[in-house]
Image (cartoon, rainbow, N blue to C red; front, side, top):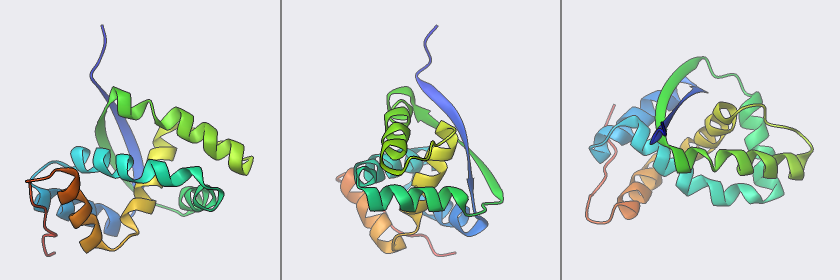
Length: 134
């Protein structure tokens, strides 16, 4: 039997988790949908060597909170060639899809929160996103 979604657990900080929840609430969606949008937004940027090293830095930085998300299978499958590209650029192998997703998500969340909310709005034209205050 095929599954439409894949469950992954990522490591992020408490502040990143709070920002992610605020973005999801402002977007009137769940955290998994925002993570999927984040992955679509950040994956193209990871093909440059500088960004690949930033991703490795995000993996190496401690993140005490675990967050479980559901991603469409086709989107989760992009993590495998993404991790292979990182290994090709840096000679460092990313050990898991969860690690690659967590690092990509942390890079995405490191951007300006207002810009993130605006990007979510653009990705879902006609569905305005706001950043809900803490």
